[in-house]
Image (cartoon, helix red, strand yellow):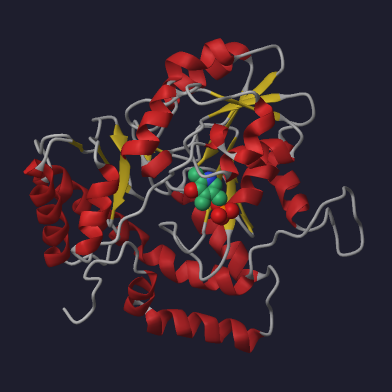
Length: 374
Ligand SMILES: *Cc1c(COP(=O)(O)O)cnc(C)c1O
């Protein structure tokens, strides 16, 4: 290879290159139409995205963060309320709670990085209004347990599906379990726009109507404003791009699952390297492929020296972020999430990886492992 990086951690350009003619045609069509705000492409995208998630309604927005904020707001979550979520996610799954005026209450996670459902009940108080599970890494959270606790305590469930489009739990797609599902279309997510984007999915017509108002300044018609809100529309250009990508999403997802299966097999049994495993009732889509190793930083450096890019999702648990300092948590509050933060490493798993690259990554991890006590 001429490039010093033989396996970059991500390669969005390669994904777009593969379908460039289709993308340019879609972009060109929108340019010619002169219509850039909402309009046909956004509607068609929403009409295709909803059934893909097994729900009646989808609303295109300008980010996954706004999807989370709007879902909570539409369900009436606000000042004085508490929302139970996890400390090991991207910060948006917590900031959305704070931004609607509510208080995030964390519970620790399991070995699969998702919420430990056995700890939820202990975190419920009279102020708890909702549970916000994250389908982290593209693996569905334990929805049967979550829905059971939620229904016994009269709580809303808002799913953070930002990493998990097409993931399934007991044969059902994520985004269809809770009162609302929230997706990100950020370039690094598995269904990605060429810029920011997000979606709320729901079966609840009232939630659907509210989120549509929230994304467009509370305007019911062009001239009638019924509630104060900002501007969070999905661009028509992005919707046109997403419609092209939707046609390839199943193929890309299968390839990532293939890559994950390759790693699972190749890395099984390596001493002190922990590989994610699939449960029979779930279909993970592997937004990230996260291994754990005691000597994580050394392993990351070793892989870097071999030209292999990796990433850490996420190095600082949310309860230990500076922004969270007034929430009353400290080091030791969530031992599983904190231990994982020191051990996790995301390997490249995107659909454009070639066989030699998969082999190169797996061999490098194998070579590193037995070298020293770690
Ligand atoms: C990316 C992400 C978000 C936020 O989505 P944006 O589109 O970047 O606003 C929220 N939650 C999780 C788990 C994410 O990975």
